[in-house]
Length: 148
Image (cartoon, rainbow, N blue to C red):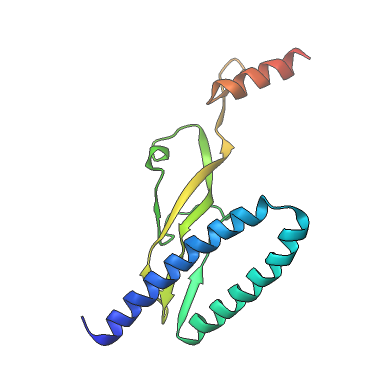
């Protein structure tokens, strides 16, 4: 492994460590009282701008897909693999990114690690016109709505 490969590997490790720290910091801020949150939120935003400027200047792009629809082809590793054969949801979104996608000179050097959450429930109409929803809670809700 050459010097530039070692430097990229070291940078990726630093970016991922910083990402994890920032996620924890953001979580703590979200639980703080408003005065503390506002005070430290500004400092956090300044640090993130400086961090992005530094790595952008070195040829890196850090991609955050949190809240975005999940699509095959994203350079991500899905950690909650139990959803692969899930028939309840027809679409998914990225609920949390544990590691971002990192590009260096337009090449992926780190595949993002994500947790997905379901967005749209699969609904099927049976031949008798009844609606069949893939999970029991939704079935109970629909039955309750129809009774009203």
